Image 1 (cartoon, helix red, strand yellow):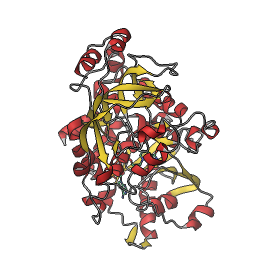
Image 2: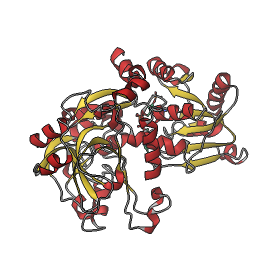
Image 3: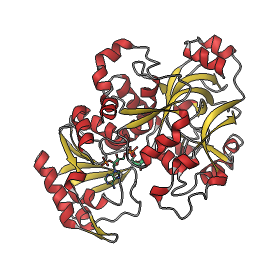
Image 4: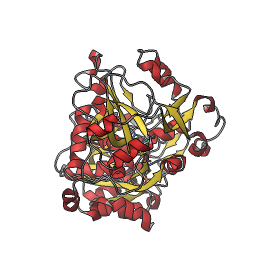
Length: 448
Ligand code: NAP
C-alpha cells in the first residue's frame, strides 16, 4: 500500500499507477455485527461512537465491472455515520444483508463488518472493464447515490429507484478507509482549487441541499424567496445558506450559539436567529406543543425580513416541524430530508390545508443534481464549510463531535493523504475564490 500511496502523493501518471500492485487489504473504519447490541438500554446521547467504530485492516473485495478502486485521500463525517455507529434507528447490517441477496456482486457486501463513510476525495487506482468515462489516475470526488442502472425504476429520477441506496450507509466498502470501492456513476471531478480534505466534505451535504432548494424535484427557490434554514451552520444548513444566497434569495439562518451566528454572518447570511438565546419551547411537554411559541418564532422572522418565509429547510424533525409548518407563508413549502430529533412528527394540519402549504420529502440527490452541485464548488460559488480535520485513527472522536452537535459545518477525515493542505492543482482559482472565504469555518473553529 505504501508504494501506491507514495505514487499517488507524487502525482504519478496513469501508466505508473496501473503498473503498481494493489494491496490485498486496506485500513478501514467499521462497525462489527457482534457489537450491534452493545448500547442496549442506553439513551441515544450516551451511545458512544468511540466505542463502536474500529479501525481495522480488511481485505479488498473483488471489483465489479462497473466499479473503481479509489485511493481515498480524505473523507468526512456525515450524520449517517453517527446513526450507524450507535446502531439507531436500526443496525445497518439489515441493509447489507438485503443487498447481499440481490446479486452475486451484492453478496460481497453482506459481511460481519460494515465499512462506513459516504464521502470521499481521491484518485482512481483501478477501473472495472465496463467503466468508460473514468481512468486510472483521475482525481475525483464521490457522491453517495448507489443505484442499479439495470432497474427501470432507476431511470428518470434515480432517487425514485426501488433499490436506491446510500453508499457507505446502506452498502459496504465506504469512504472512511485508505481504499474504497464505488460505482463509476458515483464519480465527479474533484474541484482542482481545493485540498483533498476540503474536497471531501461536500458531496453528500451539498447535493442534498441542492436538490431540496434548487432542483425541480425540490422547492425550486428563486430570486427574492425567503428561506428559513434550521441548523444553518451545520452540514446541510451551511450549503443551504450558500445556495439561497446564490439564487438571489434571503436566508434566515437558525443556530444555537453566538459563535455559530458569527460564522453565518461571515458567510454572507445577514439574518440570523440564535435559538439558544431566544429559548423557544415549541413543546410544553413530551405530548403537547405550544402554538404561542410558534407564533413567537414567526414574529421574530417577520421582524428580520418583513414577511413570512416562502420555504423552510427542515431537518431537525419532531422538535421543530410544528413550528416550521406554522411559520411558512400561505402557499409556501416545507422541504424536509431528516428528523434528527425524532421522526414521529406532529403539526397542526389546519395551518397546512387552510393555507395551502406543501410538505415535500427529499432525499439525497440523483447523479445530475449531484453533478450540478459539484459544479457550484468547481466554479467557486459555493465554498466547503470545513471546520476541522481529524486523522482516520480518530474517526470515533470526530463522529462523537457530530453526534453531540459540538462542531460547525463539516469535519474532514484524512485517510491516505499524509497531511493537510495537499491536492491543490489550480492555485489561480483558489486565489480568485479567496483563502479567507475558503477558510471561514476553519478559522472560526480554531478561534473558538
Ligand atoms: P449537523 O452537521 O449535525 O447539523 C444539524 C444542525 O441541526 C445542527 O448544527 C443544529 O444546529 C441543528 N439542530 C440539531 N438539533 C436541533 C433541534 N432539536 N432543533 C433545532 N435545530 C437543531 O447534521 P447535518 O449533516 O446537517 O444533517 C442534519 C440531518 O439531516 C441529520 O439527521 C442527517 O442524518 C440528515 N441528512 C439527511 C440527508 C438525506 O439525504 N436525507 C442528507 C444529509 C443529512 P444549531 O444547534 O446550531 O441550531
